Image (cartoon, rainbow, N blue to C red; front, side, top):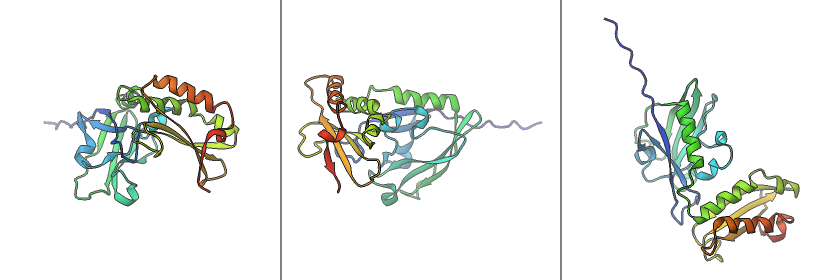
Length: 238
């Protein structure tokens, strides 16, 4: 009697948004991979945070941290609210192979005693749909994250900065009181001269409960886009 060949298990991916602690180093929401209904990082790095944050999903989904192509690449999945070169984390190699996406080559520099997950295989269409759903889901947002997302989207192409000889470095929400002179959550925009990696300028605004995040963003963009961005910025660095 011929032996039946066991088909490889096809896992299902979903992605869960988790707001950071007010003092966390990364202030965008964590995007945590949920595999077959179970939070993967809770098993392999229970005290860590996801290295995949929502700002990586602003823009083209094919450029997000978990995007899969035929070229294998190592993806950092978690960290200890610190640089993984210092404090370790969990890594996996992601690649697209025909109609599937594979997660292989697990590496845990946080705790080598933790057993690595098995090779994971996903249906590529379901996998891509999960990435798109994570990008489209804003139900988790509080006002400061809504404001930061809208600002990041408006400035994403970098055209305005390039026109004045600068490059956009990052857009970041702050749920804590930071910088110290701000007494409510804020959004910060960091940019630098194109030919410099040590001089930075910062623009930002506090996000209040007096009006919608959309109106506050509209007023901020109207103000800064009218002139050289350096005009109303704070200088950091030499």
